[in-house]
Image (cartoon, rainbow, N blue to C red; front, side, top):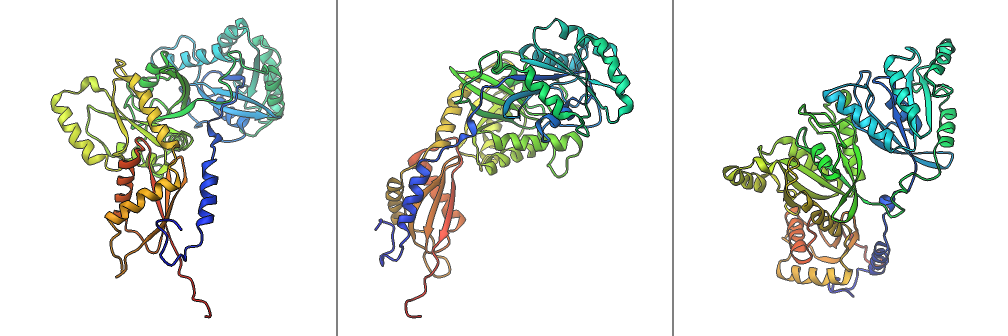
Length: 475
């Protein structure tokens, strides 16, 4: 009989709980496994259907697609598989040689993707034919020392086959007639891609263990892409003064404090998903998916401005997803003494849902304290992965309830019979009781649980299972 069991010994499911506890003890999450796989870069001028073709290669809708040029701006990596071969597909923004400003930054991302890929897929609009931009891109690719495939896209019927033949003039070999929209010859294209890719990537990959996944989230123009660029030491994400520059999640490997992390820069959440439209709608979905796929989330807040509704909504998404969390107060170089006093008051009021998240004051622009993110991330992940043994948990809970019993409800005081930590990622406690526990008392238990065991940086969920009354024998 446990210390929390009913006096009559009627709670007979302790063996079930012990089995559950042993099962949870050996719980492993393979979501962090990252396979070493070769990389295919998909390049071409704007609006030739690169992202649509990427979705066709993946066999699922991942890349944001809209019938306007310039939707994709950063280089975005996706995992793909064909005939048992795994590889990474990198979608890029439209490449316009000689472009400046924002378009120049987009072109630089495409060039970076090409220089780090194991093979390149050039996409050309067959209905338009080879343009001067296509010829300039082909000239660069012919000088590269990696396999190049030529996809003649938008060949929706055989009337365009003569136009496809004219693309031989690009000097990249046989053009493959495909229709990303309708799937024409997508299987043949995938076969050619697999043949062109090496068995292993040129850089040797990351190994089977895989780095921990970190999502960068926040409202538009809070500095997410600037922070990613500062961490990587390169212009990994396109940065512009115009809010909403990032549309797709941008995936990067970052070395922090001697450890490799997989960072994902996301689009800023401006509207609620159900009220957003166009690329903003799909970008919101991708951001939510990035949070769900991450293990720990860095929520960037603009310390120089008051907390906004978007900030609180982002925090709510992270909490509801059950992810470990670190709060990065960015633009700290713009904060004076008066603003610091106001900020402390705002955080006390606005962050009531995440008082357990560690706060780090940083400046993505100057690099101030960005290296302090690594210890905060490790602490959050250790809490997220941690389990408290059942015996230790019940011993602590027995003392807590003896000192502060649950409030009376409906004329009866509920009793807590047994407790176990049923899950990790996030830590989830299950309390087996004789009656319902008020929300206020559950928050009290969580607060005392954190005071005793820590769990800084991770949400803790508390579920209650009420024991059903058993019918008396003989009835």
